[in-house]
Amino acid sequence: MAARLSKSAFAKLGLPKEPAAPKRSRAQSVKNPVAQPAPSASPTAFKTAFSQLKDTLRAAEHRRLQAADVAPIDPKAWVEVVLENVVIVPKERQRFGNGFVYTSKRTRAFERTLAEAGIKAMGLRPLMEGPTEAEITIFFPIPKSWPKEAQEEARAGLRLPTRRFDVDNGTKAVLDSLNEIVYPDDSQVVELQVRKIYADQPGMIAKFRPVLNKLGGWKK
Image (cartoon, rainbow, N blue to C red; front, side, top):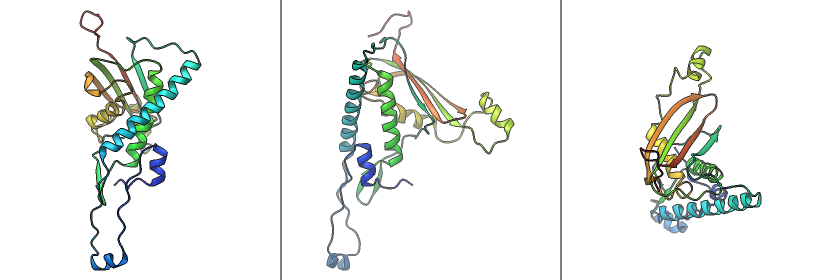
């Protein structure tokens, strides 16, 4: 079960703090020991703050690349977002507790990590407009408790991860986190291929590019 984000966690992620519950006097506590619901934190506030954080990170990366005189990426090429030795966190529902609406610390940290990787992968390239295709490969760590033979079979692709998390939850977490980084909105993804495989380390490779038509022409 996810715990409420601490003040230090919010500060580290660059997100607004959860509102404090209103204090009650000792007399009120004695007369009415049942806690009254506190005003809920607006989910929109967190979404807005995360969007602003993405803008800040993108601007910093653009300044770095421009100073290094790095050429923009070919707009027709695949953009490859890579996470190495990072456990993929599936999409979670917003949680409710003590009158607050919040997202778990683990999910917030993962979204921040993926956003940073996406910004670096995009470089000076503008957001992809229009229909977009995606290929996502999610790597699950091979259980160290398995016999050697089973581990080798997993490396060779003869064993595949069929347990949780569900592939759609993992995909949604990736696509949502890259909004306003790779594309304005993940609703633009019209073609999607997803794989779950075993590897020595957890991680992910997500590739994106604008859709090409059947004749190999360019769709704007």
